[in-house]
Amino acid sequence: MTTYFSSSATTSSVRAGSAPASRWIGVGGTALVLAYAVFAALQIQVLNPLAAVPGSSLREISAAVGNTADTMGWGLMIVVLALGPLLAGTITSIGWRGRIPAAIMLAAMLGLLVLGAPAYFVASFPAGMTLADTFGIAGADHSPWAWVLHLVSLLALIAMALSAVIRASVRSIAPRRA
Image (cartoon, rainbow, N blue to C red; front, side):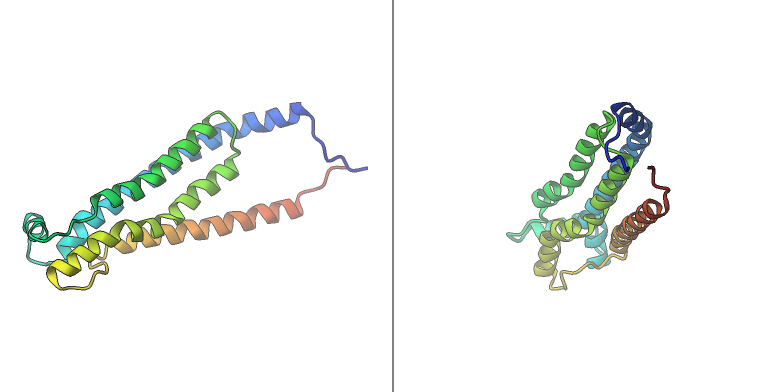
């Protein structure tokens, strides 16, 4: 006869044992998500404009943009890029109380890093279009540093897939209790 119900003692010990791991994953994941957002903002407002208009200082670029009716999209950028760290912090605070298993915490943090690439695209769109309109250039990324963001998101996606495969493999070969 197979028992599908576990006692509360087993559940609390599993929860207590995974709380420290979940906490560290949450704190580390939140730090990575925050670093991603800060680097994305640096890429959007500093690195890309300097690469898009070589030979010009950031002050000269800002003055040229200021002479037009365009803006560099600071408002949208801040809102979009702040969502990741806010979500990561919220998830971490819930996980700090031991309510999120380590595997779920890991998946959540990796998922936020994966979603960083589309968030970066949305956040950078106004600044890219402003540079394109002001200087008559393409609105795409001109700085090679954008690839760092895309690479981090891709690696997080690969890590999520590997984590799912490993968990499924462990479940399939783990001995079943009767």
